Length: 399
Image 1 (cartoon, rainbow, N blue to C red):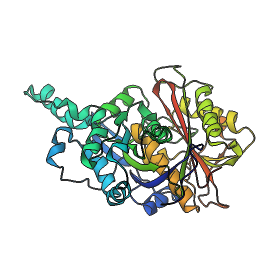
Image 2: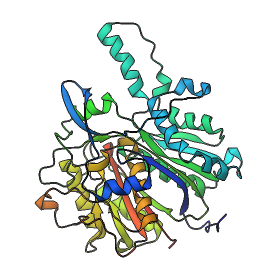
Image 3: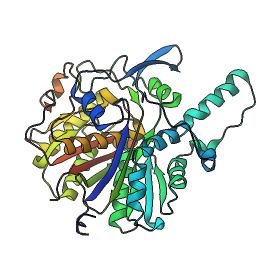
Image 4: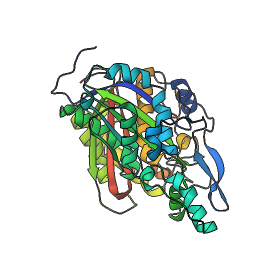
């Protein structure tokens, strides 16, 4: 084991991690997708009646075998999580063998859970008027964390956070707090969301879906693309090459679906993260925007960035034109991107290449993927309905 960090410092180590999304499932695939012009989204039908939409779909197969004791919570969402877990399961089991099972916790974020599975049954009911048995437990938010807890055989706290688009970022922050409160020795955190008709039709009814590929901060931006992802991280007090330094959270409660127009809550979350990490805005080498490509969100986020970073020309980009907006898993997959940036130290994710809104163009958007010189800290923003804001800071060294 490496050196234990001081209990006075909030940073925790990311011991193992994995991210599955439209970008792929390996570090090299993530880098390739985010540093080249290639399109990673898919044009699909079947989600919205008589309409094709661009989505960030995970294209690889999911695991097919589910243990019998997980049948009650079986869903595509859980299989997505188990597929991700399988890529780091051996390492996690070996690492956590040193701890009491009651000191091993799981905190995950989701907004869809297993609802996609029940959508098929409900369609049978409404279209064919056929009697169906809907298993509600598989779509309950808590079933995701409980399912993984049952699978791993852990006995510590296990719960799911569902705060829309900030869900998994909040799960990551909650894991850090659990460790610093000495309530757990290791915590599996992250988030999983899978494509379903509910979210796509919901955003379509809000007129928030893009007619093409989304263009964050673009002059002609017209909305979001929905995506799916599974991102998992094992956190502990032990130092690691990339550390979760801090999290800053705020709550606007400005509007049920629109952000505060001046970005006050977003700015507060970013500043609180900087304060918790004990660093200055100028120490941040890259900022991963929430960057949904809606008019209101992008405009307020740029205002918030200008408030916090002022004269510091921090490199920024949104990666949602490559992943889609993964909703409850957005914070997790973007945390994975930030970790890879710090681990590799050779690239930054390209911002969308179209024209930028003239009112938002005085920013240092990443248009050249090559990173030089190395950076030590990156920030990732996640902002949700109701004004649920969170900013995470990752670093390669303790301050």
